[in-house]
Amino acid sequence: MNTVLVTGGSRGIGKAISIEFAKKGYNVAINYVSDDMAADTLKSFIVENYDVDVMLCKCDVSNEEDVKIMVKDVANHFGNIDVLVNNAGIAIDTTFEDKTVENFKKTLDVNLIGPFVLSREVGKYMIKQKKGSIINITSTNGLETYYEYSLDYDASKAALISLTHNLSEYFSPYIRVNAVAPGWVNTEMNKELDDDYVAEECEKIYLKRFAEPEEIAKAVYFLASDDASYINNEILRVDGGCNHQ
Image (cartoon, rainbow, N blue to C red):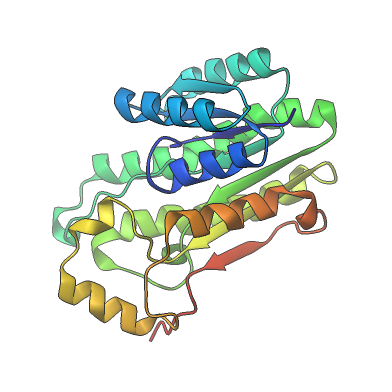
């Protein structure tokens, strides 16, 4: 049975990704950093509804040594890691004047260094088995939907796109490396947005709405599946079509 490791996999987009892969018969290793209740609830839901094995992995992806231990534990438990989804991410939105070096570094550590270390460590197993798929969750903020309050987040996501391109070449021909770049998504974080701002942003989107997490998850699963067997080094936008002017 195939195994997927999803970072930031207990809530939001990560939760939807974990469920989507479970639906498709994957064993799921769900990484999370702090919310034990959310992780336990998701594990129970998947075990009750799908005939797969679920492993919870509490680990800060910005901690290199902890990541090494986590990846080894997942590989030992399941015997293989076929898909890695680098989904864990943070955004610390402040005015430019209030940005601190500490917060900027933390954003890069989670959003960029984490995926680098995870790809390096999981890649060792994938190379041995001569197959695998890595999918990085970046953002349209890493392309051209810049937002001054999250310039550190935007920079990290642009760098993650660059990392995707480099890894796709390095890991060839056995491991495919792609990225999904969502636009606005209906997650808990975005439910706090002002209604007028949401309406204004929806007007820029051709489909006139935010995505649901499940719609992002389906795109991620597609890139990992055999249906995408000749798709590599690709950044797949999932933004509903958007006028970025």
